[in-house]
Picture 1 (cartoon, one colour):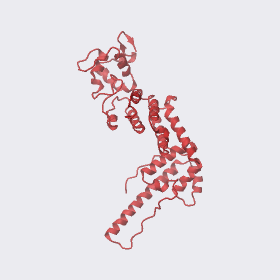
Picture 2 (cartoon, helix red, strand yellow):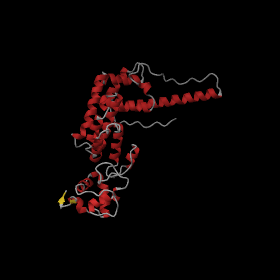
Picture 3 (cartoon, rainbow, N blue to C red):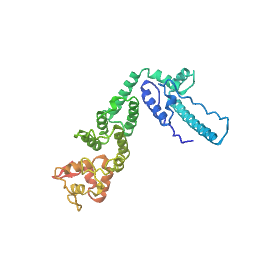
Picture 4 (cartoon, rainbow, N blue to C red):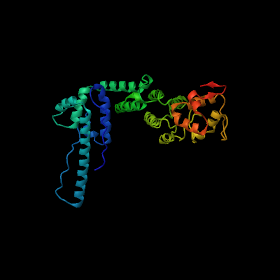
Length: 327
């Protein structure tokens, strides 16, 4: 028997507002396990799942074919039972009981899901309207709610986005939803989001942009790697030039670690033994020092203190710019 993954039960079906996320999770799980056609509530005719009958003649090839059919049947019934268990564990008990009474005619999972859908989402227009409202509210939430943690936001956003994808909503297509996502992501990853928004604004930038799915995966990776300063793996995953983010650059990256960057050393100490093409100008240096103080460079600041490029008093009081102006 092939391995079947444990099904997450974090999404609960309690009322009309929770139905879109719940149904999106159900659809994803059923399709991932290859059993959606057996439980799709919108289908008028579902495949019959019957155990294969033993052939009259027991021969080598015939017996092997029967064994394969039996194994396939066992795998399907096991997966459908997992979905049954998931539905039972995620639907509010009273609603499940009422839906079960309505589905008692044939006792199938497809009928049970249809009963739940008819009760909580009586029309496709209502469903789309609810999904669209949830998606927009969750997407823009970081811009108004400062208390939402990045992990919580991207988790909630992923569920709402999944529901919108299932319904193929126009609101998630094109460049505008990407910009909305990045504007909200700026609350947690300002340098990254600002750089990507600037890239979209350049001529041809929208054409070369990543998809919304890719930006979401990238943000998840950045959230997990927050504070380490390095995003080489993220760039490689997305097919971009790998590298390290460094305070010396407003955008882009370079392939050497920031703790060995000659431009950064020169901006902080006024000298360096390393060779580089463009010396930071007096106008650029304050920006470099300002970027170094951002949360994403916390680990880098520790390295630079150990190297003597900055001191603890510099970090506590703000790194001093030329002319003794304290940032």
